[in-house]
Image (tube, rainbow, N blue to C red):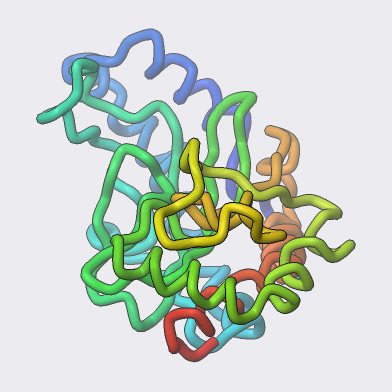
Length: 243
């Protein structure tokens, strides 16, 4: 039996660091072969190898290794509405999305992966000194946000079980943006008003660069994603989605 090989290597982080220092189309064109070898191809291989293990968490989860339009985010930044006109992202982003999601949009925020139908996702972010994994729903549409908040009102205990238990808190913490004031129409004295004020229902866990170099990276990610599964299951319940 052949020994397992790592997906990423120090060359991955070297390329991303150098791209951050030389973020131009000319430099990228001259180093595209390095991008393919150290970034794109190992990422697609990782996505392909995660497909079956993720289905053991939920058969609704999709890890799509297509080169375009799959789980791997484009390296190109959308600069149309940004003051920052650098053309390339300096991280690797990939999303493992719910099968009911109609269309996945590719934003500069890697885990902004909702489409025509909001659905919870898992996310992986690879950046030198700033790797993390996570999941949930980032920047949901207003109707989705209302459904989540109402479900929280009706199911506070299940939300607390999904996000306050020892398995979740072993590695993950809730994050994202929140309102400065309680949302209109909700009791400001509700015991979970902090959660009701959330504009994002996401959680993340830090990874080290060394974690990404492990030969058992698939097993590590699946083990951690499994700890986050109750939260994704809860969000699916809020949106009448199977999990």
